[in-house]
Length: 75
Length: 373
Image (cartoon, rainbow over all chains, first blue to last red; front, side, top):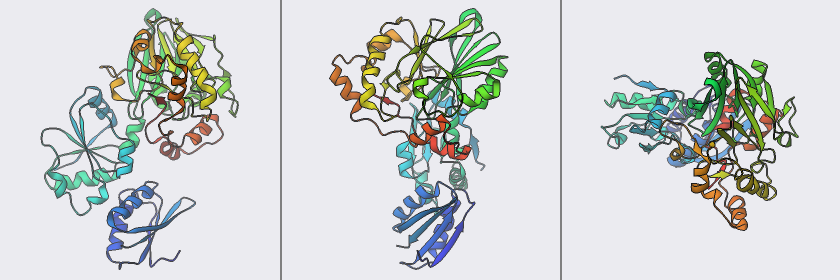
């Protein structure tokens, strides 16, 4: 899936994946897609809940070995 | 203002002593709804940490000034962040060290009674998950029943008591938590017993535990009583004719569910016979010690989970259903959700898969859900 930007949050523990995702998203335009790569297992549930509460759309998530990948479209 | 850590052991003490506590749980709503720190005198507020990144001002009004505040998250990182932000606003809180993972793993040893010739029986209360394990100590020998995977706690406890663990039992093949039995047996040279009917797919060496078997532990004896129903192999233990370890067959305020190995319809008759015939034939004076508790109300004032069998025959709804069809419906229909990852937990307990420690932790997150009420 194509992304406008990629955020490497691998190796970061909660809350940092969300903190960084949020910061990245602030600099993006509505409709743009951010790809997030994380290794913290909690990121899956938290990014899903965060996207929903922030009005963003979680387009897809994949597991690639130890890395969790998320594509979120800015709302 | 500094932020203090509170350990799972300190929180467990507060829960057992019914002390007032306010929990600000900053996990996401689903995680909080699924599983949280339970207690009779706890007030809660659940706001995910990611809704507080812009500031905690709006939360402050919702926090009490007259009781301790504990900030809780999954692993601790987010709770430290939120506690720091609150401290910057002049609000003093503590965070739960190690988060809900540490809470899930904490074991509180509680003495439940005396055995023959000065022996002692201990219950290890896994307060965050509701699992109960046992250690009978007599002289320089010990036996362990239904150990959890925090094996160091059992090994260190026996060492402090100057006892060598000789026998390690699992009442059945667990589906809700990973057994520490095999590991403890390996570390101590003890014999590891499993009911053979549950162990058909087990890939390691074990000693079959048959009904009627007796193990000698110092001056005490542990007798095995075959009591199928939760699983086809489920076995109870009677220690010194005083204590009845019921595994996942009978709890204080509920009974076992027969479906976690996928065979609810087949095993419901066994469950009924174990509860209504086999246990009925035992002495009312036996102190029932289950492998789980489900709600905090099942804890006694000292934190132990135990009640006389005779009292349970009077008070436990699951032991008082005369109509067989009604009983069958209760334990096969409208069952609570199955425990998280229960299939992988069963495979781990069979030795078929060996997940890393971090993965084992993840698999066990959540409540145990082994009962029907």
